[in-house]
Length: 114
Length: 111
Image 1 (spheres, rainbow over the protein chains, first blue to last red):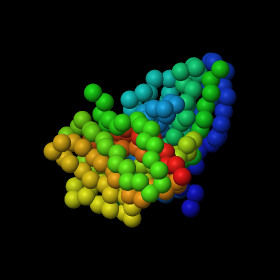
Image 2 (cartoon, each protein chain N blue to C red; image 1 turned 30 degrees about the vertical axis):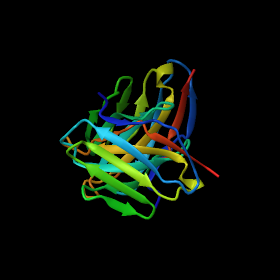
Image 3 (cartoon, rainbow over the protein chains, first blue to last red; image 1 turned 90 degrees about the vertical axis):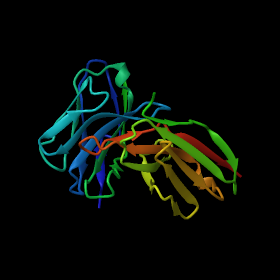
């Protein structure tokens, strides 16, 4: 059982470049999330989804976009990379029927924008 | 005021010590509460849920005080392997499962 899988694990982008962070889960979870974690800081919610075709903004959505065409996949798109987007990105998933809020995380993507 | 507040630490304790972490949350309508553990450069993992009646899992005890909006985690007989950052997490349940994370408390257990 793979759980939540993120790719890539590491990436260096130049300012202005675009990229997609991939996230897939095999637990049939309805809820999926993207967080970013800056050094020494807590996790900030970027976007979330309550099911296929439904997404909404979290607390720090600017500069990002998401889509949820299937239950399994929840990619995060950075359109014009900026140094302020240097961070560790975590994808997570949870099920409304599973301990009310327990989340399973991917291993993270470490992104550096130079 | 931050939604979930924790003392960032670090807490430096010797092996075998008992250590306690506290956390306060601002949303009185919050529904469920958790402690997650995060090792350096790794993803957060659920340590334990926190119930109003208090709950224990081996050397770990969690308590919730809804009236004071306060959550605690007690670790007894600390091990070197307990060194990590402990994240207080609150589910605000505003229409979906909105998990709000504290910034974490760093624990360093030394020999």
